[in-house]
Every structure is written in structure tokens, then in C-alpha cells.
Image (cartoon, rainbow, N blue to C red):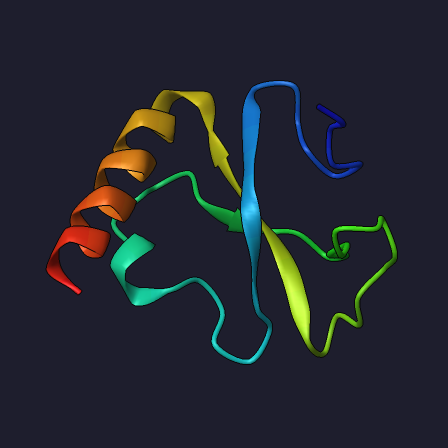
Length: 76
């Protein structure tokens, strides 16, 4: 798997998020989550930062991120 250019060695790229909404509310409990500057589509083309930005989480919270996302899917 290709690493995101902004991804630190101890981070996981978890996907892109809307630039206007920022970090989703259900993920704000994660203390290491951060938004990057440039998101890419599935073909590797840059997306406008006005539209999407990448999300990263530190390795130490990767399992917690997955648990939050799984719980959200179960309740929606």
C-alpha cells in the first residue's frame, strides 16, 4: 500500500474528509487525529483542499479509531 506523502512514520492514513466540515464530530475524542493539506482521489490525482483533506491518526489510536467507526456503522 502506498503511503500518503504527508503521513508520518507513526501514523495511519484513515481517509479523506470534507474540508468544510473538518474532523467529524464522532472522531474528535481521538487526541492524535489530524487533517493534512492535500487529499488524493482513488487514481492518485490531487483534490482541491477546498473540497477534501486527508485524515491521519497516530498508531497508538488506530484500534480506537476502528472501534469508533465500527460502532457508528452498527448504530446508523
